[in-house]
Image 1 (cartoon, one colour):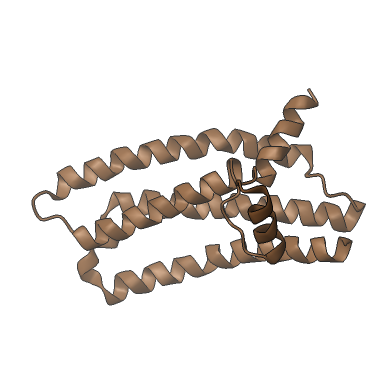
Image 2 (cartoon, rainbow, N blue to C red):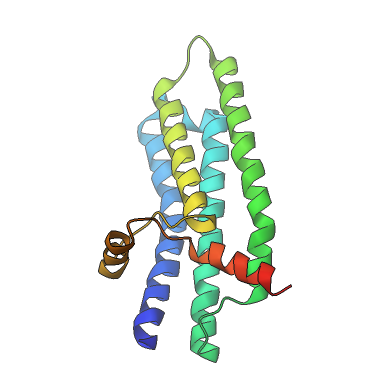
Length: 175
């Protein structure tokens, strides 16, 4: 059981880290190959991309801390220091999400009437993906990528609270 859990945690933090690393050159290549998208000229692209990368970094740190604790102390409980830090970052994430909406409006006004619609569409999809990641980490588990999770989802017929959300509740009840 412990080895299976450790393997799962390694999968989660390395997957998040891999995403952080690969999204940078992918965005560069998309901008290079399709300059007409004007991605790098859009503030909405940058805020959305930075928000997504920031959230993925938080996910990497969270899953790595859980895995490290399991390896070193044979405990699956996330260190309270990490939970507190991520709880503090939750507000930063919300501010970035709200700021991104303002920046989308700014880009719309700045570029009107010659809007780079394809670039704005890509920025918008990155933004939506970042919001889904935020919900997945901080509120409700949206990612069900293994048989056990899928069986649990079918059996329970409702989405589960995210692991980090459960840690927040544990932190509040221990005060």
